[in-house]
Length: 309
Image: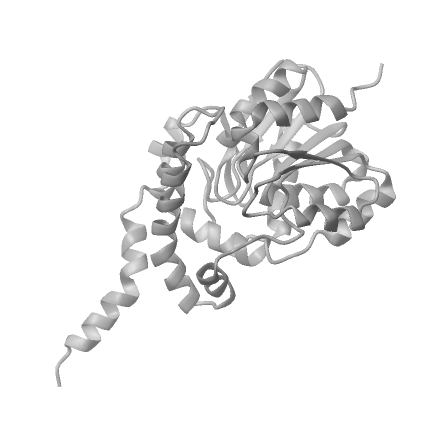
């Protein structure tokens, strides 16, 4: 009996692992490239950067599923001009942060944020800003820490439903086989999406090349799938109702042409949180914090709750 079919089958099964081995490890060499600093937290090293003055109201920015903390660089300059001291950081498996194994749940993200804030001595009066999946992470964290917030700002937030293609939904919902499918198909799909973004304006220099670099780092693809399964299947309804009841000021900013978080989510959010203030940016898609930075900054400036005397 020929062993060829078995060998071919084993090679096919091993393809995702072989691809992963060819990607750059998240070791000392990668960390030496990083701007900012690292926090040694229970879930691994977290990369973070402070921008702006040493004193002033603190704005903490939580990025989304696939684009690390550099997504904030353009908007951060606007926030600094408003007087904010801005903290940006990389979620696990993105940017320069470690990529621990395990399901990436809201609890895991909350533990990371708690640990980083504790290390940096940030206790309260926080303006928390979340983009896409980061909007969901921020809302869930805020609902459990209402006493620490000045305000919550959400940019194209998840938690009210997102649009996924059929293959991604299938891979998300089926363990093992879904892992193989996602690891084999996602890099190509991401590369095509990035080519389509090359013509878009951006306040973050080289953002498409930065995103391509993510695909070459170990743990990134696995982390994206883990977040799809552990966080993005959930709803932020309970969190939004709690925020409304607690009187936390919430501003939500949406892209009118967003293909990922549809504008219908705006109506859903208003049902859960009657006090939310909402702004729609015309012509913006899902990348509105870096493609329509001026409009986002203007909306924040118009609704910003300034520190008291």
